[in-house]
Length: 236
Image (cartoon, rainbow, N blue to C red; front, side, top):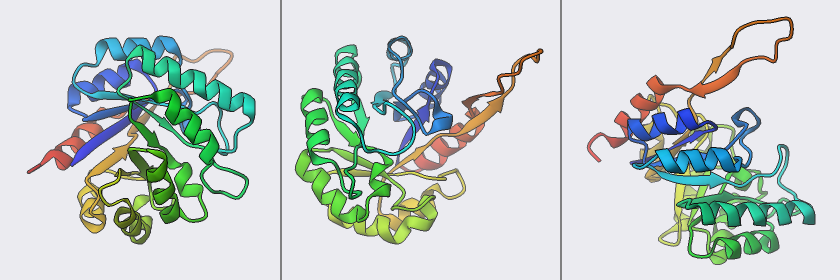
């Protein structure tokens, strides 16, 4: 079973690489669900991570997934930058006002990526019909979809995940995500037939205090990451 670890820092990416993650999803602002990482962060991670594929999240802001023309243009530029920097893949998503995949926007982003694989992020879980979205994504040329089956957690989305896996067939890969940890990773994989998992194990870290406190930041939870990779790679 393949493991993708999401992280929003260079230190987290280096640790995930060292611990044996098959793939890293690089973002910024993980506490907001992940946004597009800056060029400096991407450059440093690509320079230092040699064992894991680095895929770049393209998401211009927090909140929903309906984007203006200006935001689409920004995402196109971000895809071009990620590809030119040497990313192994990009992760995108966009919806229309009816909560369906925004075919026009996604088509533009996929065209910008060229031969670099494009994955669809959890915008699919907001779709009115995630199973239909799988078919649409396959027609667009998406290679992979991250999904919890339209639920908050993959454990609760197992029935839909099964149907999505059937719809995907040999056309594209699914990566199960949403609350996946060492204790449930194999159960979810076996229940759905999905051979890839995604997780973002994080710890809250508080810096030195002062008169003004900007709050804690997050860091990769290396212990959970190590355990998850060991469980996933066992007998694989």
